Length: 296
Image (tube, rainbow, N blue to C red; front, side):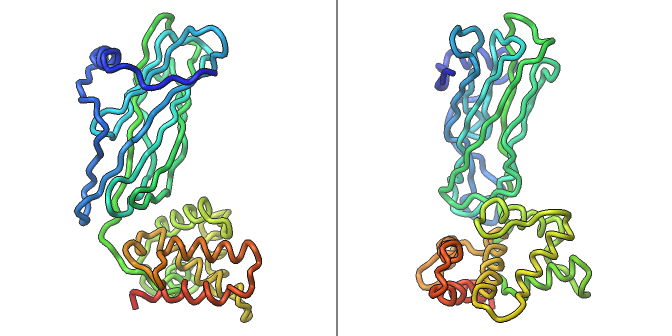
């Protein structure tokens, strides 16, 4: 397999002109409407590779355009069973968390190209954080010979609304209890959002995994937030899950406890649990608890 870097500017502009684009090729950022003063996310890198091992017939090209928001790509001389791979890096270049909902594909020739891409659903990017993904393109049987097929990969993201403060473990118990109809009351975080938070935590945490239907996930969260017995391990997990939920909601940005960020406390707590450091459970439980109570 061979790896190809971004093509020369001249060749890219020729390709763009064929499909009616006239973007400046630059590595800027996309501005997202937000109450924060600097909220930006952009593609930082795009490289290509394919499944040709010996003779080079087809060519795959990718170029970052549209102020960093889009990857313009095309395949030349593709043939059935040819596969191309575009690996990209996306970075939060702003100063507030961004809910990165994924990338969308614009494929004007679905009869010739089958395109799949990494699922980034429910990913939060903190300032300066990056994430990577791969878009795979499979050439189908109806594709024409000696032809050039263009397509685009575009970022879709949302900024957090306005900076909120961390919420207590009681707040999160109420959200899941109300959502599962075990108690009555106003639900301040809707069920779809709660499920997205749990899905994000499942993808990022080494301790928690929520599976099944939405109701089953909510019950699993409630069981952790309402630990039975008085073991310090269960208490730590309860406060840790509440902190994870605050982190997923974007309500931990800018706050620290004892000089530690929410992410540092989450990592420290999970490390203690993974390594059975029972003598540190209470220490991390207290830090999680203190962070969750910042908002009062």
